[in-house]
Length: 148
Image (tube, rainbow, N blue to C red; front, side):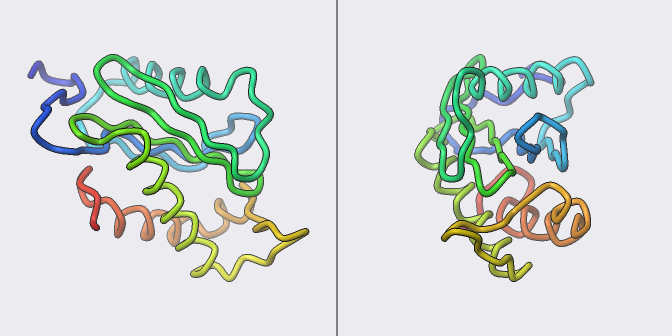
């Protein structure tokens, strides 16, 4: 594997990147589990934007797509979108399930109120609780390996 290239090993399931944004694309949090330069990170974020294009992003919307040899998935919770890039055996279903688990943990830990039966998750809440967001993501995904 060339330095700075996302891993393409088929023998393991790895999450290469996780990004949380507002519905309008403002990045709240991002984690990359490979050593990537700014251009490569931008390519990944652009692929996340691409799978969102043309979709009405409402609570519960699931997004899927591909990036090079990996798979990408996104999930909307309230007014926040979380994206993940996976390689190896890490398919779209696994990625969406992972993102659902992270959102469920955030809703529980942050005691997010529901509005009209949906969590009132928003970018301001997550920015204000950045440490909690980072801790939940790091607890669920250690160096790109999903803690099952």
